[in-house]
Image (cartoon, rainbow, N blue to C red; front, side, top):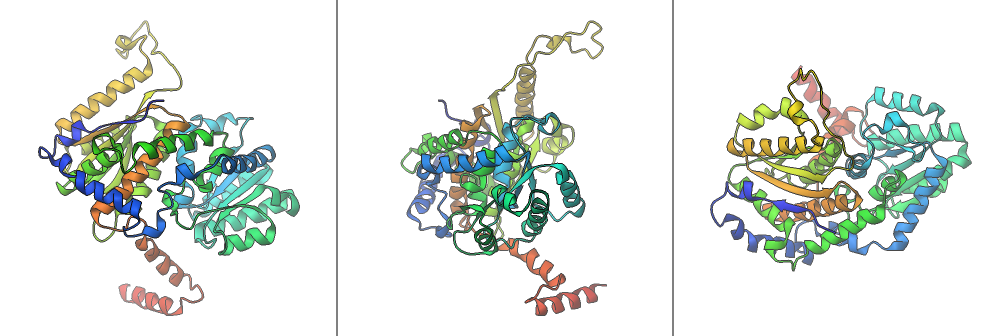
Length: 451
């Protein structure tokens, strides 16, 4: 099997000669700090060798649980937020039929995602949709008290029990949570739900290769063995003893940090395959939450091309030159479709007749990359042989290890997220949550002064 490849020539040309090579000792030190556990956040390094630690027996347990849900549910609702759902959604959306909702595939349950917002209309419409459906729930929360997910799970648990009866509901509600503590663990033990553990040393945004991601992906009918195999091969390909010139993750980390030091503050993840939209969303959380702290960090953004060339294309081509792009390009699409001939040729496109649609897409990609480079936008390209479980597994680990290296190069803790707590503190104070009396008083006085 081929591996994904990285072309950084259209990015490194924006750096001084020898700048990428100069990063080699820094990257080596950054990766060794991960391996030796001497970096900040070293209690959250469980993802580092996670792929190689996954056993066939563990995957068989995941698959057995997924099969139970698949056999007993028309719909499986994944309740989780942030890293508790983005990885699973990224993989499922990438591999699913683009019109799965309309097709209503009889072989596989519909996978829904909830618990990632507090939209009343969204939650009401979800419960209405589920009223005549045999549905199950995968509740993903380490603590069980995250507001968005806990609120959603309350609704789903009550509705599932009302529609299926409490005993039957127990068979189709699964908890993915902490091993020993937290509200979700207490609930799972009390109700007798099947449960899987979120490892203490794996943060949410690095958790897609734990049951957090593997169980929903298996429920959707995809091959988690191949997903893990791809990640395992990439773990080897990006190991600490792999030479810098052969280590894609080390090179990617070096180039993006070199560009950052040169004033490129925004990285835009680009795809030309609509199915990768949520992969970009997963990537944005991985890098945004890992690097954005201490007044530092590359801002992660994303676009779906060619669609967004008709909206964001102008800014990327001629706006402020603080950006660079990383393109994920799929070499071979799953399906084949030829551009048709039209006798009248009113649109003037008969010169494309007989060509594969993907050939047109690839020329749009190449033409755009050349135009953007000419416009002063550095451009890296990650080439993926096919969009399948194996290569998505490679991409996942590639970006994870590169993120760990990059965070260490920035000299931040890549594995914490203290800024996430700021909004929660204010929200709980405004809602007058017990224990927040002093904060409630202070925030009300502040708002009164601002009127």
